[in-house]
Length: 264
Length: 157
Picture 1 (cartoon, chains in turn red, purple):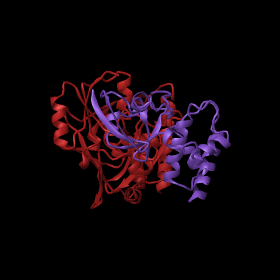
Picture 2 (cartoon, helix red, strand yellow; picture 1 turned 45 degrees about the vertical axis):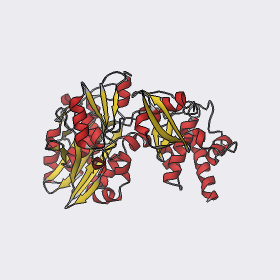
Picture 3 (tube, rainbow over the protein chains, first blue to last red; picture 1 turned 135 degrees about the vertical axis):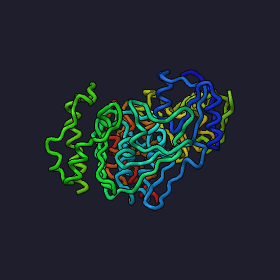
Picture 4 (cartoon, one colour; picture 1 turned 90 degrees about the vertical axis):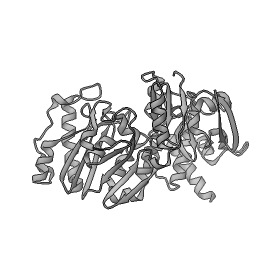
């Protein structure tokens, strides 16, 4: 890969200043996507700003029904956290399904959602659990954060600080992994909260999306039977060498029913 | 070039490297610890697995500067002199390798799995090996080796 200048700030302000000053600065979280992508020269930053030295990005806290996960908390830590396992077990389960053990030791929630890979798991959790993303500039609702393939609402020099998850009444994540990459061919997060049912689908389209017709049906009757014949229009879904749009549409229904069955 | 310093296999080491130097390049080319292998260089095969502060990582997907000040353990730090570590011995007696290319990563992964859960089951091992590829064995004897190695380690304590 091309060479660059490596920085490891210990304060958030310092990291933002480094990003602003660089010709083409790139913040790095766990680097599990960024480093392979830099090897392929798909991105060639002049400066890489490693966020691992910033302590305030590494915290997990629970208060008044909200779980806050710092941007630099690894998937392995979320998966093993007793606090998260007891408050939102579906979230700990999802984190434990990402990649493989070595990737989970390095990869972080902030990096994963900022990258917005269409087949990543975390976007389904953030949207399906109606989380709020806190950045150095503002708070962004999950529904407004993920815009399109590898595209989020984050502006230049805007970094995720933490993700705040309201604790739902119940939730479940079902994933059909690509057997080679372990990315989601389709992943579905179903939750029941005070504002009703949410069904968030990852892996199937250009970016995570909510299955609104399924949510409406489940708000009427929270049972797998409510989803009979309710299929996502396949013209909005991905077709690639791994699966056709029809197959993904089928999987969305199957996985949603399984998640509902697990909760109901 | 800037100086990086870390502890590798209980020895404090340092070297002058570029920002883009990967941890695996620092280990192999600067320190000449060539037991850690580069298989795919795309973070899929796990041949480059080492421990950083006790956690298994792919050293081809980490910059050496990210390991500044950490404790790194590579396959060279596992045996006790000429005496194989019980996990290495288990790979030998169970024929857990053929060409041997993936073996350093397999052993480092096995040790991380045992550290996390000494009472490993076969399912734990198979799930735990998701990040490590072997193109020779079909995994059967690797799984046997790790279960056997875990048992040997339990009986030691």
